Image 1 (tube, rainbow, N blue to C red):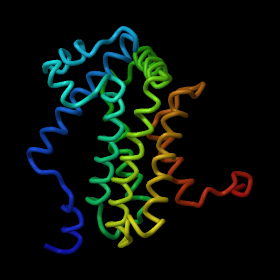
Image 2: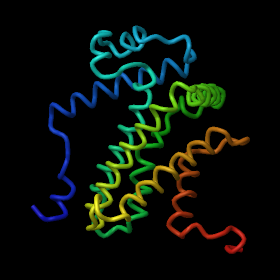
Image 3: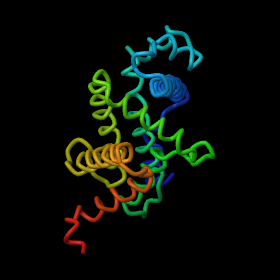
Image 4: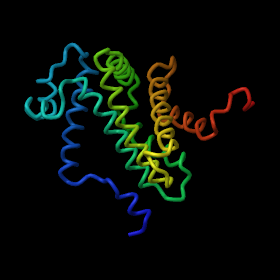
Length: 218
């Protein structure tokens, strides 16, 4: 096994951990789906457990409540971004690898249903309302901190830096998290439909260029 292969496989979860992650993800997606479709106040833990086809006790083994369950999807998605980053070709520029990893996890494959404009707008409105729920804010902050740590460790392995001693991987992780959040926010609140993939590509292009002032580009 080459050093590059070792870097890619380092920290990959075992079977037991993967199964736990799958259960966490299923519960989190169920919570998101129900809250978006029916509203935060009208969704209970019992309903989330039933939607995921598990017991309420199983839900409680993973999460204290629906806010933590919803925030878990953000953490899981960023863990997958970190894993995908390590799987990108070794010679690929870092910011290209990060863009591919982020788009691969943030932008779902297009389906006939996803091209349904009225349905998409209802979903977007539901997501906007859910993300504006005050009870969710604290859990998102905690999930984001854990996500940035995982991504910093992946960036460190990818760049030969140290996630504890060096500022570079921490800075890259923080910038990726902020840029991704900005893209999602813009896509959700834009007056005209703004596909998330296109917004992410624009964000990462600007980051890779060093965030030049727009007037200076003309």
